[in-house]
Length: 171
Image (tube, rainbow, N blue to C red; front, top):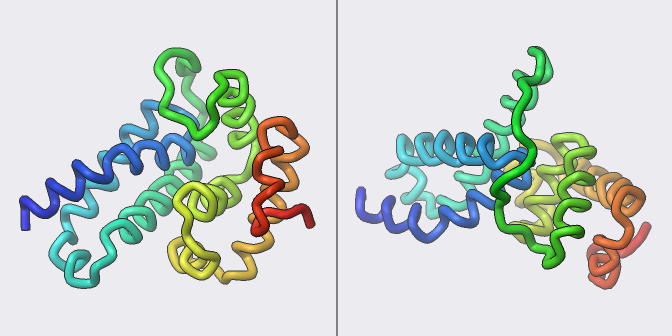
């Protein structure tokens, strides 16, 4: 069992780190989020493997931990942290586009970021995303629509490539 977990961590750690970065917008918070997620997955590994859902379980744990973190940070003063330095890999090629997309994503609500991450980055269906976030598929649809509309306002050049995908067509 331990070898299976280690192999899974090795295979999925980069994807989890990218997802965590997209959820948090901060490299250091993302690293902490991944570590805490892996710790929780490790605690329940035998059950998760029996169900055959380690990726889905990890994303559910990560999203719940990220939402808890957003709630905690909103209750206490924000610490001053460095905004520059190393960056997690991004799906866009241009550094200018990367910064514009990151800034636009950070201006969305936590739920909107989580929905976009799961739907378009991790390629989960609406029903899978709803299950992972503990909401209805209609909530996923409306959050996706609002988030994409907001992103189009905030970073129109970066999102032009999404307008060609049928499931992301303009409302």
